[in-house]
Length: 74
Image 1 (cartoon, rainbow, N blue to C red):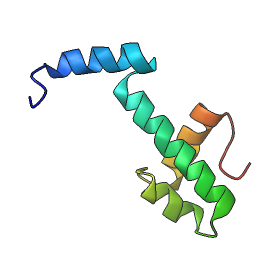
Image 2: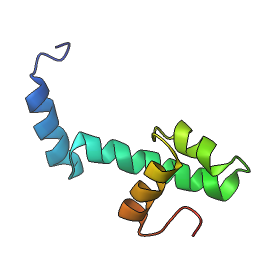
Image 3: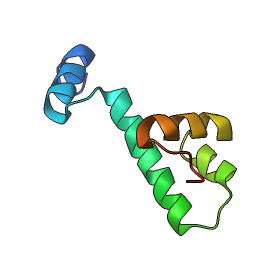
């Protein structure tokens, strides 16, 4: 509304520019952030999963396998 364009236009422009839908981009950013936290932090996996916006550790594990091809422990 502020930009004077429809939400549909924004979604199409985003996908055209970035190469993926907004939701997919957000999921990738979250999983990338979480993977970095796993490498550099001593926080428990469940805490990192929740901070990254996942419902629980098992949801995070599924998303990790889907986007990174590996479980968080790997």
